[in-house]
Amino acid sequence: MTNLKHFEKVGLDSINESNETLLEIKEIFEKYPKKYFTQKMFVVGLTKSNPYVNKCLNRLVTEKFITYKKEGKTKFYIKI
Image (tube, rainbow, N blue to C red; front, side):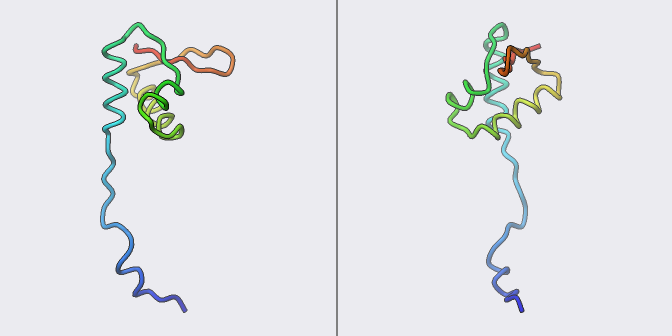
């Protein structure tokens, strides 16, 4: 039988999603609207994980804030 009392001390009561990185990426696109950026540029420049940056970029594409152009296997993102 599982010791349920253990779970009183672990877990979260709420999840707060931070939009800080998303706002940083938006700010970069607003400051340099005619430049193309790769996902790797954001990963290195912002020192964030590749999957997290990918999630942020996909969200901005969905919101129609940015678009991308694919060259080979690489996506180049630019502000709309």
